[in-house]
Length: 114
Length: 114
Image 1 (cartoon, rainbow over the protein chains, first blue to last red):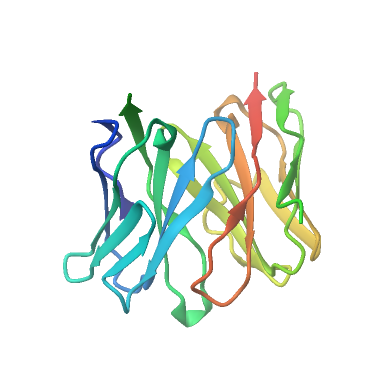
Image 2 (image 1 turned 120 degrees about the vertical axis):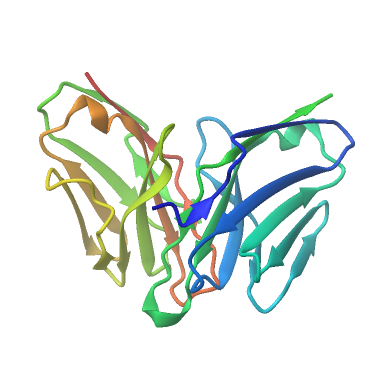
């Protein structure tokens, strides 16, 4: 049972345009959400996060939006750059109850074309 | 800090052999995670430890898999006997316990069982 779903395996955008990556979750106990970026032959690296008390968090070109009622979050990258080409993973955790394990989606491969 | 260190980076072994993957977490981190990445299932959590104690091993696929964390600076994931379907990239990650914290990943071990 996939608790974190990324329904788009891939996304292709032009340099300078906006990239929007989507993520849905099913577990209402999740209260902390993260995005990771992964290049080939490397481990995932943390990109940006948001807690459930917020609906938006911004860091430079990256913004994460959280819609708790829809159990949906998205990552916006603007403007997109060729170096952003990577696999992006959405992850979630439930901080209460003593369990901090991170549950990941399957990832979305972003290609930014020059 | 050098980050999370995994060894070996690559492992090729014959079916039926024992395989041991190693991980050194970031000093001071008290949560450690083992993940497996495959095309079909994305990043799956196999097991995680808090303060060297296994908290959730529900993701361990079979009894052939075992993990230990004898101290705060070392963990192993063992597969015995290995099978071709175990071929995947195995990641170790560590984080500060307490929720609302990101996990830092190692570079992974690419395991090929022939």
